Length: 384
Picture 1 (cartoon, rainbow, N blue to C red):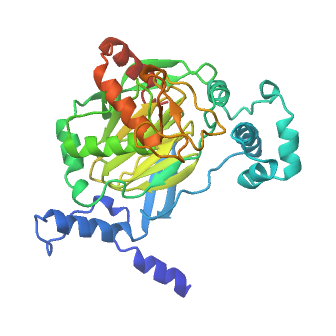
Picture 2 (tube, one colour):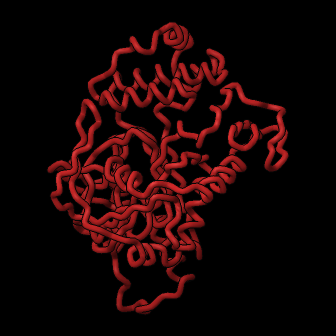
Picture 3 (cartoon, rainbow, N blue to C red):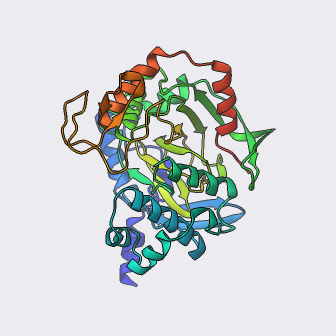
């Protein structure tokens, strides 16, 4: 009881759900960038009691903006299906049976039986939508990791680089009224309802917004995660307060989401995560949502890169065994896993140089605006 009391005392009224807390009268009305950064860091380190509503249910959890990713909530059947596909990818990547068993936390005998299976004959659990299962199989056939585990990088944008980015996005982006969209569970087909949502969105056909601090962060994401899809684009959502939300849904592509402004709960595979200012979350086809948090009074902007990892801008898919010992045509690295570019005379690049080559190539290309706008509609965040 004493420990519980101490924990409750740590959750002061200002911190409780109070990611939207305004400075008290004892604090100066205006804080310079350094003070705001220090205050934000202090709040990040403290546990927060978060109340959120989703699907008519009220949830109350204690979270921190320093928490690691939680373990996903999946049925045994879904976990089995995902592990089978990942086991085949590990085999194609050159892993031994023992290595695959260790990574998947399965018995070696299970891996042996799995490797003997015909992928097309593996039964799909009902909890995995058909379009998601087919997309993951397509990625596996193309040499891309299926059911990619999510990555959370706290403070990906931090310090002076993060200052003012929420305000800049809220003011400069071409916001429009978001509408509800529905996706067919079987086919994945998207239907635009035309019914106004409670949030606003905006899109860019490239990974540049004209907001200098943001564009620098997007370039880092592109390099560090090897985003080489020539049609990668941005879809951004503005949640003016805690009464705005987006319902659970899944994408048949990958997403890298930068969060700016007030901390909000983000539910990934059934588990809540508290995303703070400057955090980056990268994931694949996992089901996700942003539930309502009525006590939050301040706004949040999410800046999302959407891309298909199997699209490599016309490049030959890399040998999964790796081209160890070859030399990167960009930096001269002799130990990198290389990718070959047909459209650049067959030169081979490491991950960082590949991203730079792709970026330079994209800058020289002209894309059809109408096609990209249609794609933005079809692939945007859907609400049910």
